[in-house]
Image (cartoon, rainbow, N blue to C red; front, side, top):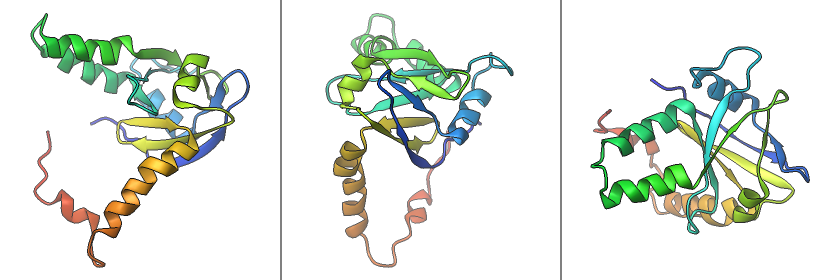
Length: 167
């Protein structure tokens, strides 16, 4: 079973697009890169997607490998395979974590999500996301709060896992 990212945090982005990755996230990236050993830079893939995606999704080597395997299982030449290849292969940026635990986000990726001085990192299971903090608060956090407000006062989110089937 793949390791999971946990938590959220804010980090400064410098003028060159360098941003520190949360330390706990770095450990998961390292453990999920089969080629990583002490002294090497662990690899990851940032999927930025199309115009509707307003965040960057960061995949470990293992996690993107699972996505690649599922894409490869689709019939060659099928429309679904072509589109998924475009979204996950074409609209992505392979990169490494530098020796100080930072990512360098290219200007194109920063501009796509409007990232300037600060980045918001949030765990998403076997991936993590990088958001412009204001965008996250406006859309994602607000959506979660709205959904929770619709639930009964004694609602326990764990009830949603009852009957969930593992793959």
